[in-house]
Length: 618
Image (cartoon, rainbow, N blue to C red; front, side, top):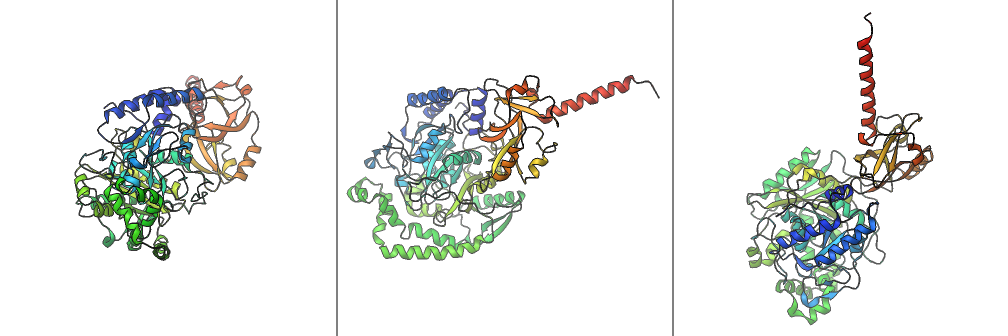
């Protein structure tokens, strides 16, 4: 199969440099999809001609100008999420309807330049962690066709792991955005409940459901999160982003289950793989803290062995009553159990949840983040078909409590077992700690190493997500005299600015050494048609008030505008008025102010040596 890299950083860089175009990438993706026809990934595949037409319109619209953050990225959507004009089946043909409007999360992707490829297979009505409960076929692991892909977001995870799309939407109520990630060697981000709009999603448990993201890396998940984390006033369960809890410090504490609460269900390899993950976290500065997982497990029991099962019935009750023969037998068995619960049971379940929340809060007071196996083991398809309820329950041991306790989570790869099947761990944080958890998970993923999904892309070749400004701070890119160690850097540090990262601009700029400036300064000018190399910048974070005072002190011909970075993100930064470059020396070829200054120092040193060589002896 021809290699095709669809990770976000690779596509952004390639588009910016003109190495390929959106129509070329979409055509290559469809070629690869045709080679994977044996997997029942798709319930509805957008016709190739329509996807190519969307790519061509996108290219014509943006041309050589600034690109939206997800420009030209192919993506997939789990088929319990609405896309205007396409059928939504939720894995049940008799339930299907054509959506009149797209889910807001899908609209945000399309507005950001992403290109829809299709809608993916799932456990019917998003009920299951196995991926075998679908009349459209059984998805399997990308590493072994005898083993399950995980569910319910089976098709979305397989599409990402097989390198057919850059990222995909799943949903997560009990672990459906995390277990398939573990079984296919990819990243699964389950956001804080309500952070991403769940309007336009066929509910499983409406009060718990989350739209989730599958991707090759935490960087890619973060890039999508930046687009879709928008408050939706029309979603009654939406929540405006709140200030996050304190970020894990450099020397962080991570919770792990006590020995008696760890379960691997007889798997001979996963206990050692989890221990190796703990050691890697030690190497990253973490200290493991054993916690009692029993109250978390008691919460998990409320989801499938408690009154929350009734919420699954509430989601589809008219259809369930009128079309009982249309449901998969296991799905019907699970949802049908809701008839055993009363309204009084629901209130008692709520009371019990709050009691357990207080107990788990005591465990959280000891740690900064909770680290668990995503699943203790995996199973063959034949094993799950023979024992569908118990084995599914085993897979949810480490996942079923997460949404009930209002946690966010990221599942990342953590090695392979002796059969060549992937193992994964999950980083769990308190509500609205998504960015910090993604950042820590990214560091671990890089330390664990290896390829992403079943592709040839090595995680070491992919960037980590940069820190997101906290509490409304402003990111500012500096290019010259304000860089670290340069004469005006104090204007940032005096304002308590913090260095976020060193990176480069998109290849759309020219850099000039301005004349008659004290201290010496460069001028950065946008030139969309230049095709020049990108320019080194530092990104600093400032309080908005301090940013305002900084901008007020910027002298002409410099100004603060908006810069495009090499990863496609936009930040505030220094730009220069064009007139000032007419008598300036262009230094774009140096790639940055520091390298230019270094060349000047070297030249002066060489001149001094030459003079000393011709001087008369003393």
